[in-house]
Image (spheres, rainbow, N blue to C red):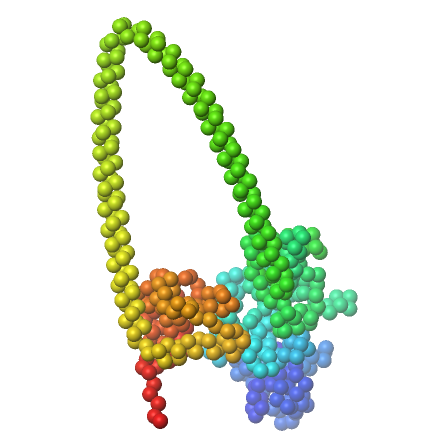
Length: 473
């Protein structure tokens, strides 16, 4: 069972659209004579148009279908959820296409929502079968790598990945009520300092909020990851939720307040610690005074015993001499060890300075390979796609090439580090973690990856030529 098919003339058609997405009527493919040769977009086997007892239009495989077709393994519930998602997306005035596969086959979206200008895309995935956190995270990152947003939808039951990736849990219509979202959206209550789950918004409304960016994915700060669910009167741990910018700001304000409280507590504890130190110092002073008094008494008794204890005094003198010898030997050993430590530190510092000089010279040669126009060309290659796709302005570090950026140029979006432009290969160990690295072409990307220091997934290149292009006037 599938909602899409390949028409021999019109191409891909969609049974959920009135005109099948290609200006055709249902009667032109359903029970026609001769029958239209429709094919399955997934396996290529022949399919034919059908209508279910619920008046649901779909395409069924002809006899002899291949057993490995992915669409054959999807349940009726899976198909109904996809249809509900597509209907809600279209109600939000976005384009919805079912069962869309990436050109290179790296992902296949149950429903792909696209804005009218095609600049924004969001994949909606109905996930009914079990899946590991690692697999769903990997599939999520594939969408993100293509600039596609994603939301995973669970119709209920156990879904341990809820809250680890952008996701929601939905409930099918009951007692005349529409599809609702029962897990995923949350609001921050500043007074209680906690996130509270939003009570069952309609699925159609939630999808509209997401597509129009009224609701966004937010990674919760560590101290607030226990979410209160009023319906079950229990807490659940979540890393990601759907919320609004206003509630994200509220969390930030509460975090600032908590940090101020922690600082006041630290200062109070420091004052108490200092007071305790003064009390102990006073007690120690009294103890020393008493000790001096006792010592004076002992000295007086010792004076009276000197004659009788001459031999004992001699033995003590010899013992003190031995202690002095041992102390001197220990001092000499400490001095030798200290000299050795200083020599090692000096050698390490010389090695560090030598490595910095070598990296700085290598960075000079690395950037000398490019003319100013080639540098500007690479900057534009980074900035223009982000501006076109997300209307996001990119800022490059006004200091230019810096050692903190591995002798590359730091790239910022909204004052937050976004990536590094063309760092020097010998200095890749200085790169900040996670952020992407932008280079001119595949040759430079291969040079980075071959060092074994950086994950290939972090390296982005634009296919720019190695040499400056000359134009004929």
